[in-house]
Image (cartoon, rainbow, N blue to C red; front, side):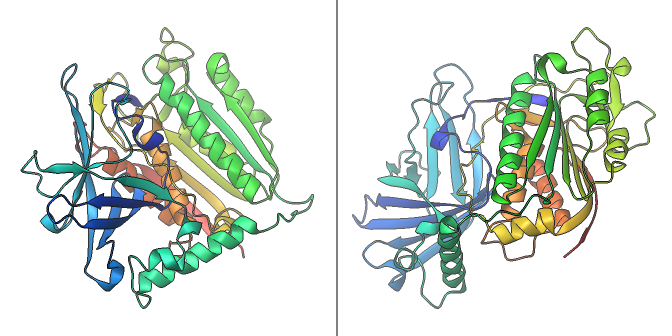
Length: 430
């Protein structure tokens, strides 16, 4: 895994991981003097859309709608302006939302975007009066009718999802009993290495928070083992796996975050993981393969095994160049459908195995974590969202995670995009 330097780190309070997030935009157009309202549905860093109406007419008047794509222009020198904007795909009928910053930490940024209808005229912009997140449960009929007719299919879908979210927020917790399965996480992360240590530390926070909360919502016992910092070594990883003893009904999650490589003549598509405790130890003497870890974990016989690695899959000795990138990580309303979450983790058995990059490819990260693990969490939340129409499946989840990580590394000055490798063999047990 290689480190990105993030310039845009604090936009919208530095938002992380996605299901659908909703934002209400308000602005007054300086030419016609009329007030407008927008509803943005934010799926991920690369996927969002927006509807706009005149505030005094709502959906009874003209409704504009478009998908949006993200573009960035990084700072090129000290005191220069960095820029990020979300641009509509249907031309000038919808506004572009623009943020810019001058300092490294983006402290001078505000949540409200600048608005521009003609990106070729950089002087023709004005400020939005408001840009606020809306929880799914806040999308009442009254609010939605500003943007949709009551006969619109999307209106009905959103209203149903909003009511379900409100009901779930009020639902009493019911104990699953002492014989319920345990969710067990074993995570290995190279947090002490200079180049990617910060990202690996963040991966631990992202992953442990996610699975701890999943266990809480599903009323499952939760146990975690972390091999990192001064305990990071090949011997300690082997010992942790040996001592890892899940039950037959348990859910097992193994996650590796760190450096990875492959040998020149390696046939295995999955990488070796570098377990060198310091930069002075040789990777070729301190490694194990993800295939060996997969076999060791799945041989323990747990009902569901999820095995992930966010690391490079480049030939040993290859060093990927450092790259600077700007990106928006979204804070997401966790529009959770507990039935879908239960289906994924309690209604399926088998093995889920994926790594961040194909043979010969680097894996990329930022101070917010590895792009593959961030994409995995995004995709997990998308699968269990109340607004997602298809039934949740591990195959779809991993495919989406790989695709989202690829999009994050497509362009933006990255020498080579990453395309993950996966093997998913699960079945429904309901």
